[in-house]
Length: 209
Image: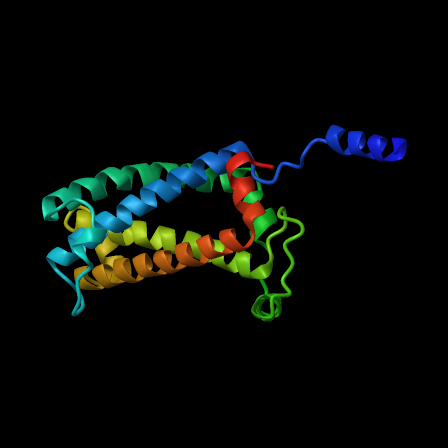
């Protein structure tokens, strides 16, 4: 009985391992909030001039009309850009991206995809990302940069004409922006599903440990 008590005391005395530092948690939730605002207001803007033969349901848009959607979109844009830039700078400066996201190899990704599909992918150590996570997180950073650049070229096509030329022309920039939005939505669905399947990862993103 005494040995069990000593062991319990040792466990309680051992500090919990920090999985997600405070700056990651704060920026993560700010990004999530801003991204949702951007998506919902973006759908409102899209409905005013659809690229394809469909519109988004009004109940899932933000702003009520084109002008309202634009106001919400621009407000969330600055929040997302400033916070996203701070996240990128801090991630590179602290070496977090290099440590967490590299290396990414095709063989590693294929191995972890097979393991995930057969429910054999381990999540014992949350400080180490598997190859699928590395690919998703690195990919969403690239998508985030593209959606910002395409969005800026659509916002100020005359003043930022060089950004428009980067995509070829204005209509192409719109398509790139839409495709990036769809990719972000798909990422959010996968991200939320993984968090529900591994609840301790969600806890770590809330309390850090």
